[in-house]
Image 1: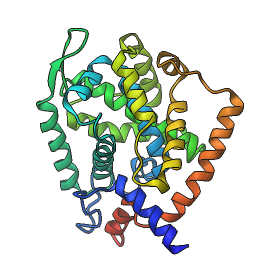
Image 2 (image 1 turned 90 degrees about the horizontal axis):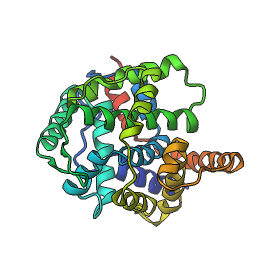
Image 3 (image 1 turned 30 degrees about the vertical axis):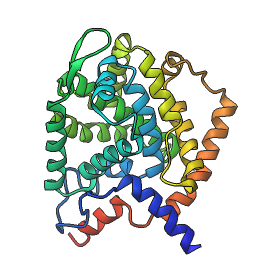
Image 4 (image 1 turned 60 degrees about the vertical axis):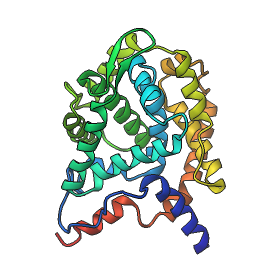
Length: 289
Protein backbone atom coordinates (compact mmCIF):
# COMPACT_ATOMS: atom_id res chain seq x y z
CA UNK A 1 0.00 0.00 0.00
CA UNK A 2 2.84 2.39 0.82
CA UNK A 3 4.45 1.70 -2.56
CA UNK A 4 1.20 2.60 -4.33
CA UNK A 5 0.83 5.74 -2.26
CA UNK A 6 4.36 6.82 -3.11
CA UNK A 7 3.83 6.17 -6.80
CA UNK A 8 0.60 8.18 -6.92
CA UNK A 9 2.22 11.05 -5.06
CA UNK A 10 5.20 11.01 -7.42
CA UNK A 11 2.85 11.25 -10.43
CA UNK A 12 1.09 14.26 -8.95
CA UNK A 13 4.31 16.02 -7.99
CA UNK A 14 5.79 15.43 -11.44
CA UNK A 15 3.07 17.72 -12.79
CA UNK A 16 2.43 20.14 -9.95
CA UNK A 17 6.02 20.65 -8.83
CA UNK A 18 8.45 19.95 -11.69
CA UNK A 19 12.23 20.41 -11.38
CA UNK A 20 13.16 24.04 -10.88
CA UNK A 21 10.17 24.84 -8.70
CA UNK A 22 10.71 27.04 -5.64
CA UNK A 23 11.48 25.53 -2.25
CA UNK A 24 8.14 26.19 -0.59
CA UNK A 25 9.59 25.55 2.90
CA UNK A 26 11.89 28.59 2.92
CA UNK A 27 12.40 31.21 4.21
CA UNK A 28 10.58 30.59 7.45
CA UNK A 29 7.72 32.97 8.14
CA UNK A 30 7.44 34.48 4.65
CA UNK A 31 3.71 34.38 3.74
CA UNK A 32 4.28 34.97 0.03
CA UNK A 33 1.76 37.02 -1.90
CA UNK A 34 -1.29 35.65 -0.07
CA UNK A 35 -0.56 33.61 3.05
CA UNK A 36 -2.06 30.42 4.49
CA UNK A 37 -5.38 32.00 5.48
CA UNK A 38 -6.12 33.18 1.96
CA UNK A 39 -8.86 31.91 -0.33
CA UNK A 40 -6.15 31.37 -2.98
CA UNK A 41 -4.39 28.79 -0.84
CA UNK A 42 -7.70 27.00 -0.31
CA UNK A 43 -8.75 26.88 -3.98
CA UNK A 44 -5.33 26.11 -5.41
CA UNK A 45 -4.49 23.35 -2.94
CA UNK A 46 -6.70 20.66 -4.52
CA UNK A 47 -4.86 18.98 -7.39
CA UNK A 48 -7.94 17.28 -8.83
CA UNK A 49 -10.10 20.37 -9.21
CA UNK A 50 -7.14 22.44 -10.42
CA UNK A 51 -6.42 19.90 -13.16
CA UNK A 52 -10.07 19.90 -14.23
CA UNK A 53 -10.19 23.68 -14.15
CA UNK A 54 -6.95 23.91 -16.11
CA UNK A 55 -8.31 21.77 -18.94
CA UNK A 56 -11.48 23.82 -19.08
CA UNK A 57 -9.58 27.12 -18.93
CA UNK A 58 -7.29 26.19 -21.82
CA UNK A 59 -10.22 25.30 -24.07
CA UNK A 60 -12.06 28.50 -23.15
CA UNK A 61 -8.98 30.69 -23.63
CA UNK A 62 -8.30 29.19 -27.06
CA UNK A 63 -11.71 30.31 -28.33
CA UNK A 64 -10.16 33.77 -28.58
CA UNK A 65 -8.21 33.96 -31.86
CA UNK A 66 -5.37 36.10 -30.54
CA UNK A 67 -4.23 33.98 -27.54
CA UNK A 68 -4.75 30.95 -29.79
CA UNK A 69 -2.34 32.39 -32.35
CA UNK A 70 0.21 33.21 -29.66
CA UNK A 71 0.19 29.67 -28.29
CA UNK A 72 0.41 28.04 -31.71
CA UNK A 73 3.09 30.36 -33.07
CA UNK A 74 5.35 30.75 -30.05
CA UNK A 75 5.10 27.72 -27.76
CA UNK A 76 5.87 24.01 -27.69
CA UNK A 77 2.25 23.25 -26.86
CA UNK A 78 1.74 20.95 -29.85
CA UNK A 79 4.93 18.95 -29.32
CA UNK A 80 5.11 18.99 -25.52
CA UNK A 81 1.71 19.48 -23.97
CA UNK A 82 2.79 17.86 -20.71
CA UNK A 83 5.70 20.28 -20.48
CA UNK A 84 3.33 23.19 -21.03
CA UNK A 85 1.07 21.88 -18.27
CA UNK A 86 4.03 21.58 -15.91
CA UNK A 87 5.14 25.12 -16.65
CA UNK A 88 1.68 26.51 -15.94
CA UNK A 89 1.38 24.44 -12.75
CA UNK A 90 4.78 25.66 -11.59
CA UNK A 91 3.75 29.29 -12.10
CA UNK A 92 0.44 28.88 -10.26
CA UNK A 93 1.98 26.97 -7.36
CA UNK A 94 4.94 29.33 -7.12
CA UNK A 95 2.89 32.52 -7.11
CA UNK A 96 0.36 31.02 -4.68
CA UNK A 97 2.49 29.06 -2.21
CA UNK A 98 6.02 30.34 -2.82
CA UNK A 99 7.75 32.99 -0.79
CA UNK A 100 7.52 36.61 -1.90
CA UNK A 101 10.83 36.68 -3.79
CA UNK A 102 10.11 33.45 -5.68
CA UNK A 103 6.63 34.62 -6.63
CA UNK A 104 7.97 37.91 -7.98
CA UNK A 105 10.73 36.08 -9.85
CA UNK A 106 8.22 33.83 -11.60
CA UNK A 107 6.04 36.80 -12.53
CA UNK A 108 9.01 38.69 -13.95
CA UNK A 109 10.06 35.65 -15.97
CA UNK A 110 6.61 35.38 -17.54
CA UNK A 111 6.61 39.12 -18.27
CA UNK A 112 9.91 38.73 -20.14
CA UNK A 113 8.51 35.81 -22.16
CA UNK A 114 5.35 37.74 -22.99
CA UNK A 115 7.41 40.72 -24.22
CA UNK A 116 8.83 38.61 -27.04
CA UNK A 117 5.56 37.00 -28.16
CA UNK A 118 4.20 38.98 -31.09
CA UNK A 119 2.72 38.12 -34.44
CA UNK A 120 -0.24 38.24 -36.78
CA UNK A 121 -3.25 35.99 -36.26
CA UNK A 122 -5.02 34.07 -39.03
CA UNK A 123 -7.62 36.85 -39.30
CA UNK A 124 -4.91 39.43 -40.02
CA UNK A 125 -4.90 41.12 -36.63
CA UNK A 126 -1.63 41.80 -34.86
CA UNK A 127 -1.28 40.35 -31.37
CA UNK A 128 1.09 40.71 -28.44
CA UNK A 129 1.12 38.48 -25.37
CA UNK A 130 1.65 41.49 -23.12
CA UNK A 131 -1.45 43.26 -24.44
CA UNK A 132 -3.27 44.22 -21.21
CA UNK A 133 -6.69 43.31 -22.62
CA UNK A 134 -5.54 39.84 -23.70
CA UNK A 135 -3.90 39.28 -20.32
CA UNK A 136 -7.23 40.08 -18.68
CA UNK A 137 -9.04 37.56 -20.89
CA UNK A 138 -6.54 34.78 -20.20
CA UNK A 139 -6.66 35.47 -16.46
CA UNK A 140 -10.46 35.71 -16.30
CA UNK A 141 -11.01 32.48 -18.21
CA UNK A 142 -8.48 30.69 -16.03
CA UNK A 143 -9.70 31.75 -12.60
CA UNK A 144 -13.36 31.33 -13.58
CA UNK A 145 -12.66 27.71 -14.47
CA UNK A 146 -10.52 27.08 -11.38
CA UNK A 147 -13.28 28.44 -9.18
CA UNK A 148 -16.06 26.51 -10.95
CA UNK A 149 -14.05 23.29 -10.66
CA UNK A 150 -13.32 23.84 -6.98
CA UNK A 151 -16.98 24.48 -6.14
CA UNK A 152 -18.23 21.54 -8.22
CA UNK A 153 -15.62 18.92 -7.36
CA UNK A 154 -14.14 19.89 -4.00
CA UNK A 155 -16.25 22.26 -1.93
CA UNK A 156 -19.87 22.90 -3.00
CA UNK A 157 -20.34 24.91 0.21
CA UNK A 158 -17.67 27.47 -0.74
CA UNK A 159 -19.63 30.64 -0.05
CA UNK A 160 -20.17 33.53 -2.44
CA UNK A 161 -18.19 35.72 -0.05
CA UNK A 162 -15.23 33.33 -0.26
CA UNK A 163 -15.55 33.08 -4.04
CA UNK A 164 -15.41 36.87 -4.26
CA UNK A 165 -12.48 36.91 -1.88
CA UNK A 166 -10.61 34.45 -4.09
CA UNK A 167 -11.18 36.56 -7.20
CA UNK A 168 -10.14 39.72 -5.38
CA UNK A 169 -6.93 38.10 -4.14
CA UNK A 170 -5.87 36.41 -7.36
CA UNK A 171 -6.37 39.61 -9.38
CA UNK A 172 -3.05 40.72 -7.87
CA UNK A 173 -1.11 38.26 -10.03
CA UNK A 174 -2.93 39.33 -13.20
CA UNK A 175 -2.22 42.97 -12.47
CA UNK A 176 1.45 42.26 -11.80
CA UNK A 177 1.58 40.60 -15.23
CA UNK A 178 0.07 43.72 -16.80
CA UNK A 179 -3.66 43.01 -17.00
CA UNK A 180 -6.11 45.89 -16.60
CA UNK A 181 -9.70 46.19 -15.36
CA UNK A 182 -9.47 42.73 -13.79
CA UNK A 183 -12.82 41.46 -12.44
CA UNK A 184 -12.62 41.11 -8.66
CA UNK A 185 -15.94 39.46 -7.83
CA UNK A 186 -18.10 36.75 -9.35
CA UNK A 187 -20.78 39.08 -10.70
CA UNK A 188 -18.25 41.22 -12.54
CA UNK A 189 -16.36 38.15 -13.75
CA UNK A 190 -19.43 36.51 -15.24
CA UNK A 191 -20.46 39.80 -16.84
CA UNK A 192 -16.99 40.14 -18.32
CA UNK A 193 -17.03 36.57 -19.73
CA UNK A 194 -20.44 37.24 -21.28
CA UNK A 195 -19.20 40.49 -22.82
CA UNK A 196 -16.31 38.64 -24.49
CA UNK A 197 -18.47 36.07 -26.26
CA UNK A 198 -18.78 38.07 -29.53
CA UNK A 199 -14.97 37.94 -29.85
CA UNK A 200 -14.74 34.17 -29.50
CA UNK A 201 -14.37 31.92 -32.53
CA UNK A 202 -13.92 28.23 -33.23
CA UNK A 203 -11.26 27.92 -35.93
CA UNK A 204 -9.37 25.00 -37.41
CA UNK A 205 -6.56 25.41 -34.90
CA UNK A 206 -9.11 25.63 -32.08
CA UNK A 207 -10.41 22.20 -33.05
CA UNK A 208 -6.86 20.87 -33.27
CA UNK A 209 -6.29 22.20 -29.75
CA UNK A 210 -9.35 20.29 -28.56
CA UNK A 211 -7.98 17.07 -30.03
CA UNK A 212 -4.57 17.67 -28.44
CA UNK A 213 -6.24 18.21 -25.07
CA UNK A 214 -8.48 15.16 -25.39
CA UNK A 215 -5.46 13.01 -26.21
CA UNK A 216 -3.08 14.63 -23.77
CA UNK A 217 -0.31 12.37 -22.45
CA UNK A 218 -0.10 11.29 -18.82
CA UNK A 219 3.06 11.14 -16.68
CA UNK A 220 2.82 7.32 -16.71
CA UNK A 221 0.44 4.47 -17.47
CA UNK A 222 -0.91 4.48 -13.90
CA UNK A 223 -2.07 8.07 -14.30
CA UNK A 224 -3.65 7.66 -17.75
CA UNK A 225 -7.22 6.68 -16.68
CA UNK A 226 -7.22 9.49 -14.11
CA UNK A 227 -5.98 11.99 -16.70
CA UNK A 228 -8.64 10.96 -19.21
CA UNK A 229 -11.38 11.32 -16.59
CA UNK A 230 -10.15 14.75 -15.52
CA UNK A 231 -10.07 15.83 -19.17
CA UNK A 232 -13.68 14.71 -19.61
CA UNK A 233 -14.65 16.65 -16.50
CA UNK A 234 -12.79 19.72 -17.77
CA UNK A 235 -14.73 19.66 -21.02
CA UNK A 236 -18.01 19.24 -19.15
CA UNK A 237 -17.12 22.20 -16.90
CA UNK A 238 -17.31 24.55 -19.88
CA UNK A 239 -20.53 26.55 -20.22
CA UNK A 240 -22.93 25.00 -22.71
CA UNK A 241 -22.45 27.82 -25.22
CA UNK A 242 -18.71 27.11 -25.32
CA UNK A 243 -19.25 23.37 -25.74
CA UNK A 244 -21.61 23.99 -28.64
CA UNK A 245 -19.15 26.41 -30.19
CA UNK A 246 -16.51 23.67 -30.01
CA UNK A 247 -18.89 21.15 -31.58
CA UNK A 248 -19.45 19.20 -28.36
CA UNK A 249 -22.81 17.98 -27.12
CA UNK A 250 -23.53 18.93 -23.50
CA UNK A 251 -24.03 15.98 -21.19
CA UNK A 252 -27.50 15.11 -19.98
CA UNK A 253 -28.20 15.50 -16.23
CA UNK A 254 -27.75 11.77 -15.51
CA UNK A 255 -24.45 11.71 -17.41
CA UNK A 256 -23.25 14.73 -15.44
CA UNK A 257 -24.23 13.07 -12.17
CA UNK A 258 -22.29 9.93 -13.11
CA UNK A 259 -19.26 12.02 -14.07
CA UNK A 260 -19.41 13.88 -10.77
CA UNK A 261 -19.53 10.58 -8.91
CA UNK A 262 -16.65 9.13 -10.94
CA UNK A 263 -14.43 12.14 -10.31
CA UNK A 264 -15.21 11.99 -6.60
CA UNK A 265 -14.14 8.35 -6.46
CA UNK A 266 -10.99 8.96 -8.52
CA UNK A 267 -9.97 11.95 -6.41
CA UNK A 268 -9.98 10.03 -3.13
CA UNK A 269 -6.75 8.04 -3.68
CA UNK A 270 -5.01 11.16 -5.02
CA UNK A 271 -5.97 13.23 -1.98
CA UNK A 272 -4.97 10.32 0.26
CA UNK A 273 -1.60 9.81 -1.41
CA UNK A 274 -0.27 13.35 -1.61
CA UNK A 275 1.44 14.23 1.65
CA UNK A 276 4.08 16.65 0.41
CA UNK A 277 1.93 19.00 -1.67
CA UNK A 278 3.06 22.54 -2.39
CA UNK A 279 0.43 23.80 0.05
CA UNK A 280 1.66 21.47 2.80
CA UNK A 281 5.28 22.49 2.32
CA UNK A 282 4.26 26.15 2.41
CA UNK A 283 2.34 25.55 5.63
CA UNK A 284 5.54 24.12 7.12
CA UNK A 285 7.26 27.37 6.17
CA UNK A 286 4.67 29.27 8.19
CA UNK A 287 4.53 26.87 11.17
CA UNK A 288 5.12 28.71 14.40
CA UNK A 289 4.82 32.18 12.89
